[in-house]
Image 1 (cartoon, one colour):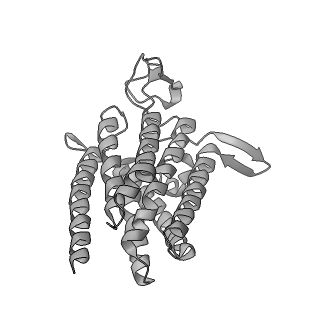
Image 2 (cartoon, rainbow, N blue to C red):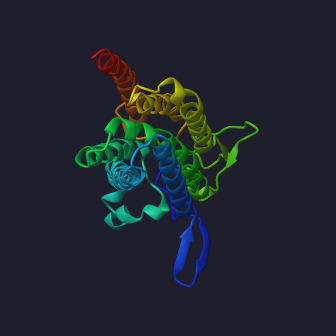
Image 3 (cartoon, one colour):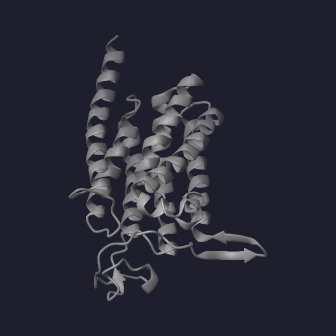
Length: 263
């Protein structure tokens, strides 16, 4: 489903601010603030770490948009000017999670910063940013799930209902499910896993990848706007790959820490 122009928060003359953009900006600011605070606690060069983070966020936004455009080319091929209309929504998180950390890690390596410790600083910030940013889907009436009559059902206006579902009014608020899951992941990373994984650089970041992937795999089964590859949902395939990467990454981080301690 392609989103329509996002809900307007307010307008001053020709300047229009949309809720989607406001929430994305809030997510970015909150994530950078949290990351800077944690980098200082970890005795890292916080300003340099945040500079890497800023470029990683920019790359992540580009990656998320390219991923969305690629899997919706039937639409964007007909309306190519819509490719840059990110204020209307349409950011696929898996694309951002691929390109963003890669660019951030590459820059940290180039700037001679501790790459794995930097990724560990970023992990809770990413989860918190996702929890906030998901509310942009609420205002755009997108990223919802199958019809439901549960007490927390979400009303979707007729123009935003997918083809074949026009007769239904209420749907699963899957954006909310993912926002709550991301808050849980943030809490686990920041309050429980961080002290237990001290001395194993990289393990916290890989735990984030695994935890997010588990939740996304489950939630994706309810969504109506999944990308499909044959009979399989692409986000679920990406989540399965994320779980594999996470398990292998945590095992590698543990082994690496043990080897360094023994040497």
